Image (cartoon, rainbow, N blue to C red; front, side, top):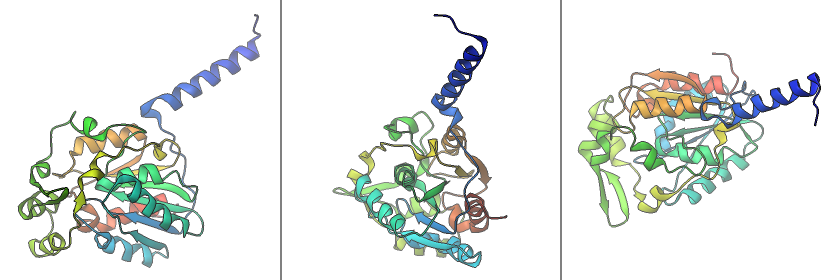
Length: 259
């Protein structure tokens, strides 16, 4: 079969485009659509109130913000709880996840209402990836040793919570957060995402440089792999509480707002 110069050039362009899509480090990250809705999802050892400082700032900026109460039972149930909140949003919506809920954002982010994704010191797996295996390629963070179980129900010990989860918060404030932490079911940790929304949606990532719950270098790896707009915050795992201004600014950028 013969091929003229124009056909050859078109074939080469198509092949190059396909290779970029397939490459893990070349996730698409177009400019986000302007959005007025923000849905925020919490991870382990927390509840929806952990977003209070960020929500107040988003509301002051004129955005409609809603925190999902993650049931912390199984990944499918957690995704379903987020999808129900997304279905109530009117128009483009930024989906934000902290910590474990990056798994939820990665899956539920496929919802057509979602215009952009924001990961705050969060897991960001690829489709069908075993996050536990990925995490083991980096040094284990100290907080992992502080997880305690009562049967199938897990939580973080007080010492680990204060030292490794909320290390840059005043102790009195950290103790209040410890008192309201949500317990999670072991089954939640076995879930795998079946889609990776960050491959097709504009993505943003806030790395916590002092994180003792997720290794900061793992956070950097995931952010780079997805091609996310990335900021680094000198914070513990709870940057959304200790540095709410920086996290809010990143969300506003994901919402196409001037910052």
